[in-house]
Amino acid sequence: MGENADPQRTAFLLRKQWALYSVTPLYKFCNAHLKDYARLLSAFIAAEKQKGLAVEVGVELDVKVAVTSIPDLKGSDQDQAAILVQLSLRSPASPKNSEEKLVWSGCFCCVFGDHLSENVPEDFTCLPLFLVNGAESYTSLVGSWFQKTFDCCFRRLAISPLNLSWMATMWTGCKVDKTTSAVELVFSVPCLPYPLDISYAIHPEDAKALWDTVQKTPGEITQEEVDVFMDCLYSHFHRHFKIHLSATKLVKVSTAVASAHCDGMIKFLQSKYLTGVLMLLTELAISQIQ
Image (cartoon, rainbow, N blue to C red; front, side, top):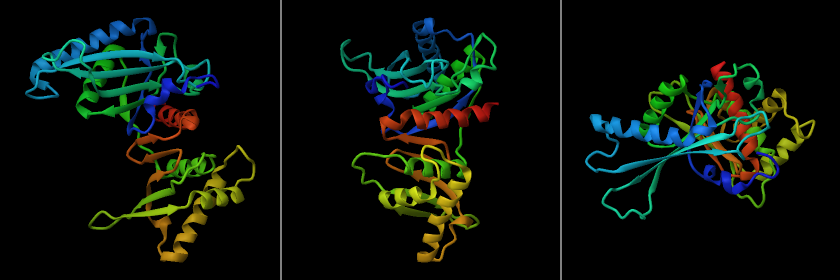
């Protein structure tokens, strides 16, 4: 997303919960045929509903499919433009000009994923990161159609505790205007007969001040710095509560920039840092499919 990118074109991503998937390269996908793809996907969903796999059981609803390109949503000129798939519902009984209800969105994108596209044959399109907001039943219908049509493979993209600690560190260091949201880390306690989570909230200014003492080179982050930052937070927590967080598992990170869960869920909160977060997620998606 270059300097001149229109934030309005990417605003649909903000403040929604997105499920993450990695996608292998699409075979013979063509940006010039998006309207045809929308028509074919719409026909596929209608046919599946006819088989009794209706998503809205008992209510006859038309599913309208839109497939559009978002050229603003990419990192470099080598990246493919993002593709947005949207499903909307309208009851056949309602007037033709009545508003459709958006029920599902899926966005294929690649932000600074040049190293993947360089090694892929000409007939393939690299959009390794797939973000989904909406019912699982629609996700599986759309996923089935894309897999059959473009010979690609989808996999849920989990986020490891190591990557979550990187996210916590990177996002803590971001300057956000007038924020009051705490940096919140959620830990899961293993080996208990019942689920137990520990939530650890840190004032954003305290977290930023700590990071400023740890970071050696502005604009750069090393694994060692991430470890030191997290260890400082763990030590502080242990001093107060006598609990070793290092023996637990980091499962969720929430900051003013974004929030991420180990199950592969993300919520983007700042358009200013959208490219940076998508770049990290693109990298995770690529590492899963290689």
